[in-house]
Structure formats: C-alpha cells, structure tokens
Image 1 (cartoon, helix red, strand yellow):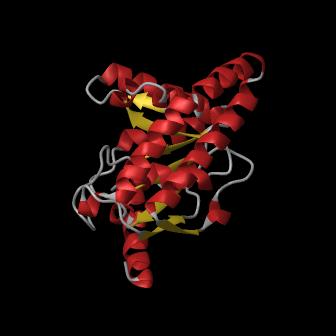
Image 2 (cartoon, helix red, strand yellow; image 1 turned 135 degrees about the horizontal axis):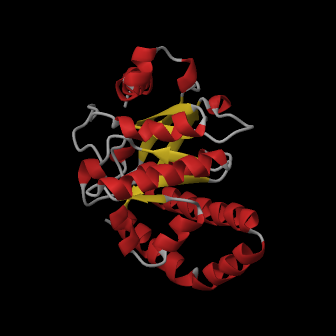
Length: 246
C-alpha cells in the first residue's frame, strides 16, 4: 500500500503545486501556442516518469524506429491499465494527445493539463458529439499533432484477451492521411489492476509496430481496420509475453 499512497500523494501535490505553472503555460499559449504545447508535454512527461518511478515500473520499449520522424501518427494500442497512459507518453517524440472518455473533464487541473497536450474527450453516449471529436482529431493530425487511441473503448479487465477495436477510431488516420502505429502493451495491469488496491513492481513491454498506411491496404483490410490492427497487436502481444516470461 506504500506505493499507492506515494503515487496518490505525488499526483495530488503535482496538480496543486502546478497551478502557477498552468498560469504561466496559459500566458505562453497566448503568444506562442506551439511552445506551450511542447513545454506542457515536457512537464507532463516528467510527472509521469516520477509516477512510474514511485510505482516501481520497469519499461522495456521496442520499435521506436517505426515512429515517423517527419509526420504525425495515430498510435493505436490495447488497453488494460490506467498506467497505459503514464508509461507511453514519454516515448512519443512529438506532442501527442490521447482520446479520452469525456468523464475525465470532471477532474479539475488534470483536465487542463490534458487539454494542454491536445487530449480529446469522447462522449461515448452521444453520436453527434463523438463525430465532432473525430473531426477534431483529423484536424489535429493534419496540423502535426499525433494522437493515441485505445479503440477497445474501455479498459479490458480480462487478462490476455482483446475487446473488439471500434472501426471509427481509424477515421482519424484515414481522413488525416497519417500512418497508424500499432502499439502493443504487455503487463501494464501488473503494476496495479491485477492486484487492486496495491501497486507493485512490474516489468512492462511497449512495442511500436511498423507503420500502416491505410491508403495502401486492399479494400477488405480498409473495411475491417479494427480487426486487422487488433490481429497485429494480438500476435505481437503473445510473442512478447513469451519472450519476456510475463
């Protein structure tokens, strides 16, 4: 329980003590939005590194050479843990927002930091609002802002399984003309969800797969992008699980 207390205390102090920093970031954004984006990502990434350290998470990262250096991308991953976000942000080379559920807007200060790094908030119960979020995502990637989405739609609570990937998630990459990067996350639930309420040391593997350009796929694959990408991630997941004994 000590790790849980340390992480919770750190998160509270980070959010409370960052109030003056948020004011400074707001002022910077008035004059130079791009600088605000970069500085906010750097600050949030630092905060996440501290949380990962306090949690005792050891992260093994593979395939970073597959992340395009000259364009935005849509990172698509499996989702088992709250720590999926904490452990992945540091490894995106450019400003990258997450597509999060709209309920996250309830949390003061945290929601401001999320907006600063270009997170989008998806209302899963309102189709029109959901479409508006997708359109915002298309504009973001066209403007060089990468996005990360977990197309299962929620945290999968069953180990070693995958919920169906929602097809709408891939419209951002298709209409924004950016590659999809399959992102396989192995054992992130070993940090927290597998033994609630304790946080324990765990090794987590994050693998970035080869870019998928939707326009280069055949018709059947484009029509079933969810199943196509889920299959790639599933195959890599079990290979990594065996390789690292997780």
